[in-house]
Each structure stands twice: as C-alpha cells, then as structure tokens.
Image (cartoon, rainbow, N blue to C red; front, side, top):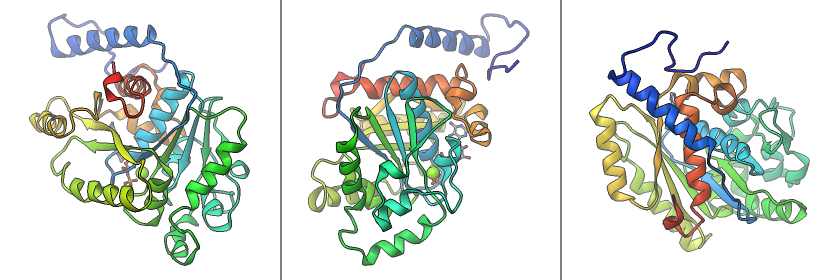
Length: 307
Ligand code: ATP
Ligand code: MG
C-alpha cells in the first residue's frame, strides 16, 4: 500500500512538530472534502510563466490542471515548452512524429487535430510539445502574424467547441522569446510561480516590464492575476522571508496556499502522473488542490472574491 508523505506507521506524542503538521494536514483534507466550487461557464486562459528556470512552472501547470479537473472543471493544458515536461507529466505521447503545438504554430494545424486525452482525468486534455518546438523560436521570426499564431488557433478552437473549457493553462519555457510572447498574446491571466528561495525576486521586474509592453502593444487584457509560492520549506527562515516579501509587493495576487517542497511532487512525473493522482493525500497534492480552489474562487478581475 502506498504510504502518504509524512504519514508514519508508529504513533507520535501529540505535541511534536510532526504530530502538529499531520493534524493540520488532516484538518485541511477534511476542509477540502467539504469544498465545492462553481465554474463560471467562461473560459479562463492562464499562462504559467517565469523566465527563471526550474521554479516550478511545469509542476504548477500540471498539478493545478489536474486539481481543477478533479473539482469538476474541463481543463486543457498547452505544452509550449520544447522540453515537453508537461506532456511527460500528463503521460501523453510526444515523440518527434506526434502532431503537436509545433504544427499548430508553424503549419497552421487546428488545435482540435493535435489535442490528446490524458489518462489523468476524463476532463483533462493536453496539446503536447515535441522536440521540433525547439526550432520554432527561430522559424516564427519570419512568419506572418508571428506573435498572434497561438491566439488565432485558440480562438478557432474555442469557437468550435460545443462544451467550453473552464480553464486553458499554457506552460511556458524559461525565456521571454516568441513562444512566451505567443502565450502572453493569447492569455488573459498570468500565473507566476515563485520559488521561495534566495534570488526569487531577481528578474521579476524584467518579467513585469515585458508584460507591460505586451499589454501596450499586443494584448491589453493581460494581467498577472495569480502568484504562487512553490518549493516552500517551512523549516527555513529564508522561505518565510521570501514569502513575506512577495506578499508585501503583491498582496492581492499571492495565493494563501503555498506549495511545500515535497518528494512526492518531484517523483510523480517519472510515473507519467501528477501528484494529484499519484498521491492525492500528500502535503503537496493537498496544497495544489487548495491553490486550485482559490484560483477558481477568484474570478478574473476580482481578487476580493478569493475565499
Ligand atoms: P523549466 O524552467 O526548466 O521549465 P520549471 O519552472 O517548469 O522548469 P519544474 O520542472 O516544474 O520547473 O520544477 C523544477 C524541478 O523541481 C523538477 O525536478 C521538479 O520535480 C522539482 N519540483 C517542483 N516543485 C517541487 C516541489 N514542490 N517539491 C519538490 N520538488 C519540486
Ligand atoms: Mg518547465
């Protein structure tokens, strides 16, 4: 039997930090079990971006997507990173000959022709990325409407769907090139994962300046709606300091939910799974579910709606 992270087979005195942590986790699981959310019927397009590498963009994309699907949402993940990590984590084929987001951006394939179901959940779909996407950054340069290709494809796809998606999440590469610009042009919201470690805020002003520029020239709707602290280690003072600083700068955007550093989260992709299906009761899965509830309850443009 699979044993949840932090759950031990021997009993502990009630007053140890671990015992308190377990009691807290149990209480949060009970709260989640009693939580229902309503989807608005409007599609929310969220781009998960941060030009820093390895801050938890992909992990956040696939786990928030899976959590939203288990809450009853119809969810699409678009893997816009040549690394294809989101496709791997969702267990969808993405070998070089698989029809993918590359064909959509470069050869004008319809999204409907490259979308795949996932084994993760009936309501969760993925547009995979393949290695070809690595060349797209260069190939796009000479294309007509090079910044708008994803937006146009998404608009066509959305108007062809009888049943609208509740969420479309786009996983970006760690750069601010044409792939990320395509995502920013196609999105209403940006979800910014911030790793609760030293240098977390470095480079953030460049990202925000880029988003401002996109707002001015390509997409007036775009806004950073959501900030999520990832890989949080509650035992370090540094993590707490980073969290405080992020909340001070972005009080409305930062979610109350914080994603802990967790082995379960990092090992799930090697099974082609999200942590939601791999170990739904673990601390990381519970935190991602809490974040998904908060995101759903915050209607775009109305952060006060967060519970
Ligand atoms: P890239 O910039 O390369 O696309 P990324 O921002 O998408 O990276 P991830 O791939 O999601 O970042 O995460 C980077 C590494 O950190 C991965 O090995 C992942 O498994 C691990 N990781 C992410 N979140 C957690 C977590 N909460 N606990 C432990 N490990 C984590
Ligand atoms: Mg990634």
